Figure 1 (tube, rainbow, N blue to C red):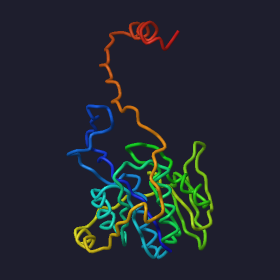
Figure 2 (cartoon, one colour):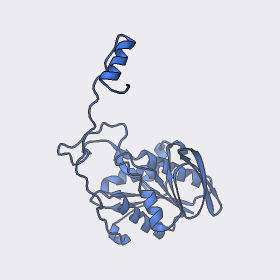
Figure 3 (cartoon, rainbow, N blue to C red):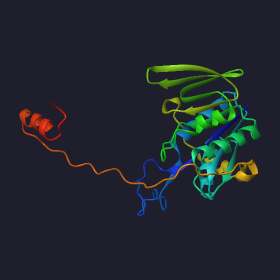
Length: 250
């Protein structure tokens, strides 16, 4: 069984985020980039499926410019077998990404498609659901446990009321949550081996996919700066401020 894993290049979660001066987006020049943390979890889960003898091949895919090959190589160093770079110049919105993944899922005959539940830059949380709708295949989002059982997979997912267990017929789409696993670090020998692993570059046209924008970003702005706290000297003063200034109590 092949496992297709989608990964996204994002700003390193520990880097300071700055808004562009014209408000058109987030500054990415001279900023450390990394694999989206939820995508790393998806890669790790695919590797564990292969180690368990369930998966035969792990294919990682990413959409973007040449720079995203760095993250694809990182995924290969973690344990993926080969990579596909879908070369695009513009920023792809969720529906376009889902259409590309649908084409690749059919081309590769993948049994499982693993995605991070959302990216930490746009937080859309839409691609997995859109991919399931386009392919007509079953889906499980926010997976915290995954077990393959023959032609089915059993997924435990977190919902507001607790845990939900689903049994899906393969092929299926699964988006990963934080509690699914803890990603490993790439070893130096595997980093060296990753340089020799195959990476194919193709365009959306080769997959018969047209990239279109369905939404427009009007402005990106930083959140309001929080004002400093105020120290009070007594309970009466605290109650007075809550009632008359903050107006949170009557």
